Image (cartoon, rainbow, N blue to C red; front, side, top):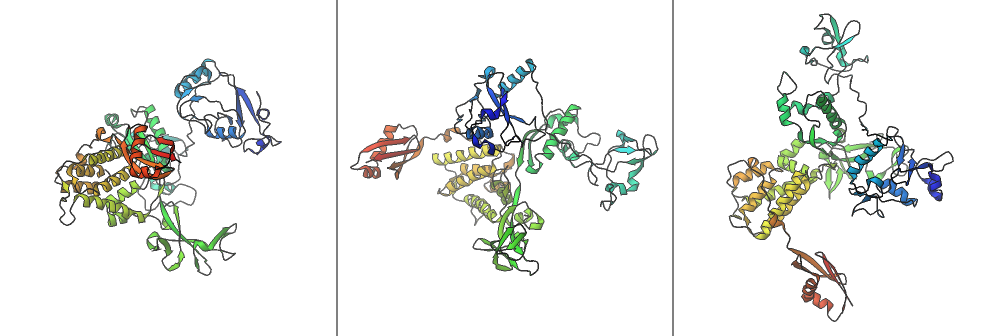
Length: 595
């Protein structure tokens, strides 16, 4: 093993790296010998490594870690390819995908997962390592000094010895109280409820005192999905047969703020229950999705509290001593206008009492103090539940954090009204005369099955926003038609049902159906209508667009060129000139270079 500074001493700018340095300011590290490949492995000792993570020494693998790749590229260090895959281009970036191992000794030819198992086996056989699982669970503060929460079923005798309540004395419930304010003495709120705290040991009949700390809310919320299986059972948390029938949960959708605490500990809790034989599955959830937080739009201005003057964000500046009016003016404080009171002029927000003050629009977590909390009841009152539901799904990917903008809600409402007008005559309330029993054209069938495939797959994968976009595009195409065949209308109603169920069920009834749409099987798309037989091909001459041709998808280059040269616009552009070069990207573009 030799120092890494010897390996890279030629790099004079190495001292500027943010990795560890010795007392002289020179980068420090070491090289180890890979026992399988006999190659040197640089080991970088970094001062930013978490003390709780491993040993603090990082093995550099620049071919498989982007940070290592950037370091090795900057200092002209060798990048050895260890994963072979068509997408692996180490001249551009590190490769972290699947593939077959190369340059890895006994691991050559194995895929990544098999190689991991093989190297662990090798290390254990050679007695130079062993398999281990590192859990990242942090210490859990389980005892809280507050009223709410599950009480601990623990008793203390007069000498301070503790013991659990017997099972027949369970469940232990919190006492009904008028207030649960802090005691002021450092004791939990329950300590002041003496008639509940002072009790009798049911086994000995001697005086006893209850534990006054309570469990955190996780004690109940970590396993509530199990109680849902059998919520009225007074003899056990749940019936074993019911648990075996229902578990595990097929899909769990939780908020991003619960991704670590609630969902991590819920899984931990479930595994404890499995170890003691209370549940039949090792994992609680088959699929877990963390939905992003919906943020609110806040409208801010600034106030000089001494003079009461109000200022737009355009007239203030921030410095080390606080927020001031520009050019060294008075100190000011942030103030906010509730969303409902904002005045809009030419799509810009202004203070309701002074239209000279343009408000600053910022996106942040919803808060009553900011006035940016959206009451869903008000949205339902004005636009209906379907609009609220559809807008929330159309805002963006389910996992993303995204801002609520009430100004965009009417757009979704207009889409639902377009669907209604497409099928129902607004004057009579009956089926529109444009909906006919005629057989649909091939183009309409392709549009319907293309949309149905997109909506089916995106709904299954929780990509609701793109499924809605596909339905919007399909409706736009239907409005270009003079008539809408009944089968097309029925499928559109069915597709929109999971997204706007009230509208869909009403439409289903208006078109003469008696069964509930929600009880019917989901329609299936026909792959034969999804085959693309033609493509629209742009034709350029010297880089300038001349025409677009609709040609068979599998047409060869010579035939495409012949069709292009026969077009009057192309023929005119190349008249009297010679074609020096033909650039053809199959199914995408044809460019003729002429002189």
